[in-house]
Image (tube, rainbow, N blue to C red; front, side):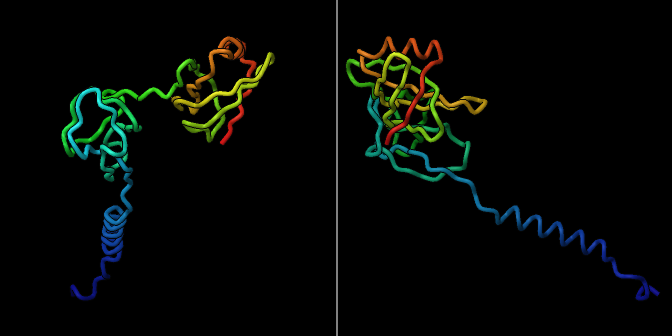
Length: 168
């Protein structure tokens, strides 16, 4: 009387769920980011820019982010990844005769943007050298300002009485 027993619907449903879950996991889009790899041998102290690298897609979080240009502090062979952080230091883009100071910035500010720093005692123009985002979402930037405006801007940063306007 085996043929009179009810079919195993629950087992079929569980098997279908397992197969569908496996397909969804296997077919989901891979999250990758472009990362620079050396296109030629790079010596210690050499400035690494786009002409010295080939961009390849790697999984997110696999390698430390590298922002070009940078100065290599180790020899890098052909095909090796160019690493930021421990393996390199950023090339300074602070103009001669200018000073850099860290200030809070609005969202959307990028390196290279011009900024107008408005204080109670005056206005100074600057250039964003490096943008940093903290662990809790706060955004600061290293802003280069001319020598003539350093004391005014530094005093306003200490007093927290400065507005930062971002230009194009």
